[in-house]
Image 1 (tube, rainbow, N blue to C red):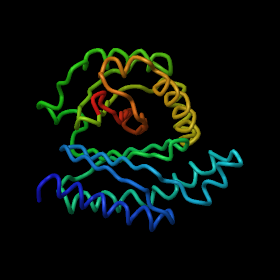
Image 2 (tube, rainbow, N blue to C red; image 1 turned 180 degrees about the horizontal axis):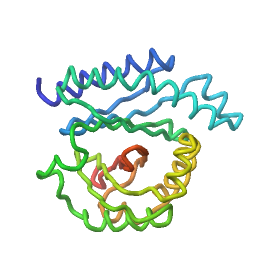
Image 3 (cartoon, rainbow, N blue to C red; image 1 turned 90 degrees about the vertical axis):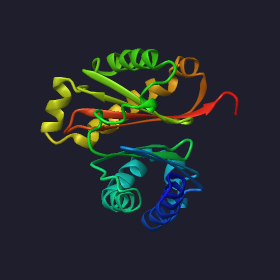
Image 4 (cartoon, helix red, strand yellow; image 1 turned 180 degrees about the vertical axis):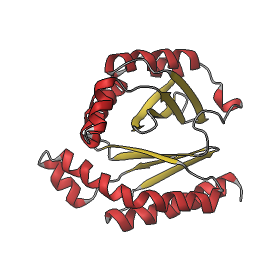
Length: 232
């Protein structure tokens, strides 16, 4: 099956899965398949119940509920990706922008940084992107031990950071405060990334959305940029 056909089929299948789990599917789904990565960007995704909660300032309740639902959705998404693309997804990363009613899922196949060493690993402004990511990471915790990034398409850039946790964060994880730490880091880093004024100039594109998620066990993070080319 050609890549475009895979992306279309995944888009249709994920729409059905999200509708079954959340009671409402997204208005639009954009899928990018670029081995070993699969990125799914959704928009117009909010249920009537969630909107009521958000209107009452219960953002955390919505995020927590989605976290639990994702635990059951995760293996189903991996199975769909494997069946359609033959990519054996080892890790899933996801994040939401409740204000924009958008979200992203990033599936990573074998070796989060060892593969993808082709044309997609080189793009204009890559060095400056890494420098900016390191600067933001320092503000939030510490400079990562390693940074890699891949332009999966004209509208999708993923950045992988390894070695980002500081001792106090590792201790919080050991004590079981995983979700508390995730919420805190998502708010802090999400704000720093969203408010950064340099990425747009570096990439010569508008930043439509930016997402971040972590795998605390592996001590790594995936940042996803959804771009809007300036000539579009």
